[in-house]
Length: 209
Image (cartoon, rainbow, N blue to C red):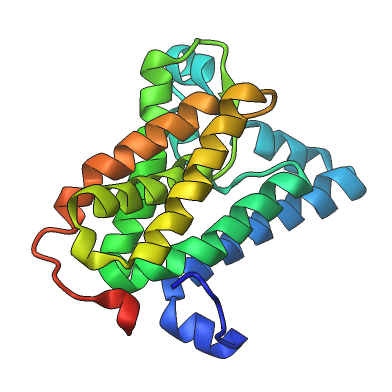
């Protein structure tokens, strides 16, 4: 289920929303890397300064867009590489199961809810960026499937999800430096809560397709 054997053209055709998410994340990173890091174009740096998540700016400055724009921004190569690789591996299966519109809701609503919960329960001076909250939202939906909709997933895929999720949680708690822990946990919670709504009446053995 998580083995990607499609060629580039087939991947785009089968998973248009996943392709869009990957493309926009990579494009935004390249704009930052080339425009600000390499060419030192100050306005680009200023633009990105208004895009990352910052609770204080939302609370005191009314900059509500910071609850959305962090989903597309990565400043480090390792960060975008890990997130895009996770999306590439695990998101296509959910796009097939949910359909493109429900999957779009799953991804973006999970990410935004993660940021909203971080705003209310996190420290005011917290700053963050990246699509990890949305990615953990997808894992939250998988978790709901594993525990409450077992007929929708095969045993081997369940084991893969649980191993990766547990490994991520262990790493997150023991080596939290540079990791947006609240965002990950709230994303996982948001996805789990969205699970029964998005999967209502879903009966298909999608992983056999």
